Length: 313
Image 1 (cartoon, rainbow, N blue to C red):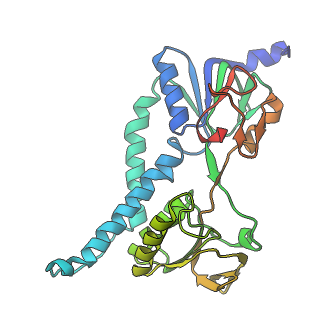
Image 2 (image 1 turned 45 degrees about the horizontal axis):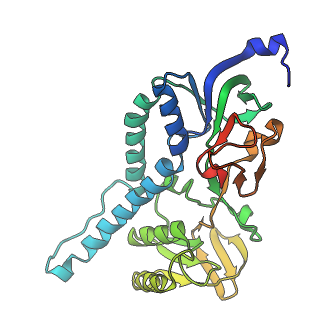
Image 3 (image 1 turned 60 degrees about the vertical axis):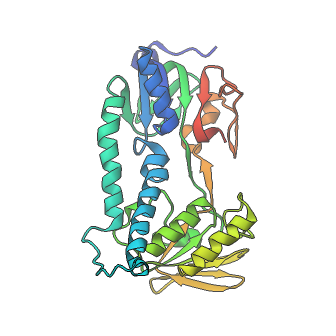
């Protein structure tokens, strides 16, 4: 058993539970621990609420709703209604951001009133100790709930492009681009293709799979693609992208079927677990590139450490 020096023990703050990551899984653990009367340390490096609230389900649906409203308004004439359409002064992305902030302000203030919330990046010093910004903490149980982050594929030139968009940062743009190339035809890429198109952006979508949303039914994907093309979205299935480059403020995506040119590029090629900042090897926690290895009870190979949510693959 590893022993600590007296000086180190005196500097380590102790809790019943440490939760790393304040997305849906981490929030649930924190709330349940607090409700049971346990002392809980909740650690979050970026924004409380995780992907779903800040850059996933909720903002994407809000943007889709804005696009749907504008699309419906443009088609009122089909139903015998003549209307003059005026876009408001507020950018659709700002409306989405305002909604996110409103949920954050109202919901989480009460949820964490009995837990200790620390903002910063957590890393293991050993299997018992977690450090955040030079402060050390220990607990009887540790829950890892760090979630996932966008996977950036190794396409030549992609990482050199300025202003790459992913679902993590696309809701922070100041204005809608005139043109957009989307790499990836899964759920995120497909949703954003329609949302951006309906809000006035010319969209091209290229991906390597034989049809859109490859985990779904091929016939359904055909219906989806037909709908996209009617709305002006250029869909390129089975595209082998060989290079992406930036010239004169424009982004050129070169693939085996030609070249797509746009103002911005959105990468939606899947996600990967957030593990590197944790230094799991210092705690002896087993993991693979797919995520942290757990049993049916979400326990890691260290029985007092759990991995919950998307970080366990």
